[in-house]
Length: 79
Image 1 (cartoon, rainbow, N blue to C red):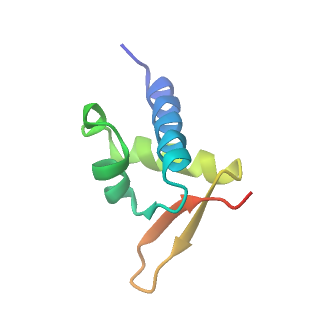
Image 2 (image 1 turned 180 degrees about the vertical axis):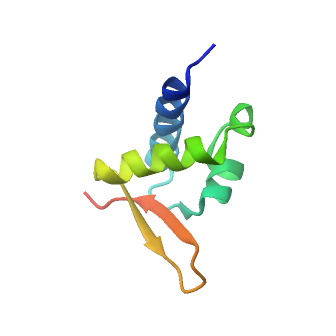
């Protein structure tokens, strides 16, 4: 059984794998949960996905952009 931090680390790896295969992908947290993560992760808490994305942003691997409607879109950072 994974701990909370292990789940976050796994989600980070899955997000990076998705972006490696689809470098132009961009989506919101809800879209990431629905489309980017394997079906087994559909039950992942939004807070865990948000934590994983925040960590990837801090590492410079992902960038976050706010849309005019207030939604945040995440995408792969430029090299």
